Length: 474
Image 1 (cartoon, helix red, strand yellow):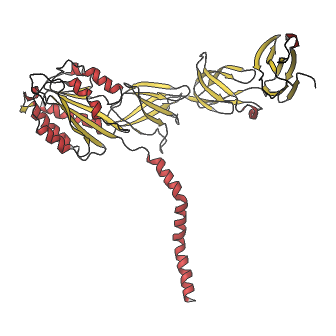
Image 2: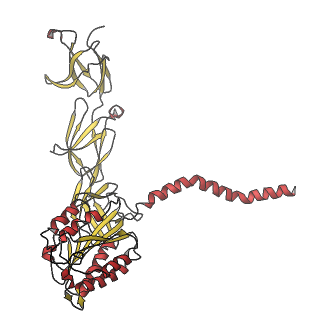
Image 3: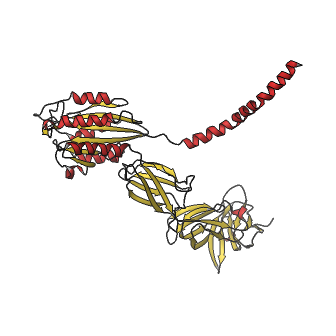
């Protein structure tokens, strides 16, 4: 007995634990699913390629030392500050460092340190042991960057060019930079000009920073790294007719303004505080934003301030269009063409039983019933549902009894308007949903070779009723 009581006691004590275990087993798929949904996308890897001038002119004296020695010293300090940075890979390409000038070697460039993690010490060692000696093939060095950035599905590719001179090999750095950006290989490059202002020549290449002294060189590098790595956020306010950010739940596509490539897709949402959600977005790109409302709205050439929270307002006031008929079940798959008022371009093809959201304004609607119904100047108002109602249709059962050639026409003021051609199929009966009104069938059997055998059958369709049209008596 004692053992039995002890067993019961142990079971009772273990019951809550067992229940909790069972509940967790039941809920775990839901919890896992929710966690997966909320986790979102991982942050992309930032890859920075430093294109460093090691041409003969970098041996020139500048302030306290040679340009090259000062640039290497200050650059090395910047590198040390990046050692703990997450999701960052660095690479180093030098030019003008392999062949002495003269003679001029316009192919003198090489990737000395490929992209990788924890390679800062290697980059510093290469720079410390490099002796400037050659010419300045900037365009060619930039063009070789296409090989340096190996394929990566989720990477930001950035070029930082450090130079004390201009192109010396008749290349076109502006054209090369533009091509790299157009292909989506790199973002707009940064250029640091040492000792002299080259802004006029380099503005077309990328974002230029003038470093006329050591302090400005250090500051330029700090600003570039800050813009590149500091988190930048963005909030898109979709404004209603009252300039309030109440619109939401629509996809937004962010295109690179230069390459035209889509960079992000976000379905707009509100956060727990009821304000538009915060987006983590690359600040180095100028964006063309498309809001996929019906019809879409666009905002082009949007520039962000790096390291800040940017708020962008876009007008997207919307309301709804719905359709109604006493015979909704008969019409639920009926397509309805939506166009902007006095515009032939189709905005949407909406099913009769759907409710769709549109920008506020006037629309022309064509309901593809038989006969078609056109309703013009339908006004969509902010947050309001505009309902378009059509009459209850009837049903016409056309019994042909034989295959042949024929059509259905609407009779209107002694005029026949074509609506439908009968099918030449083994089924010799067709069922049509028609709006109330007078109709006429014109038909000839395919086995009759004389036009005089053409028959006509007028009939009328009443709302909600079925009419049987027999082309030939039994």
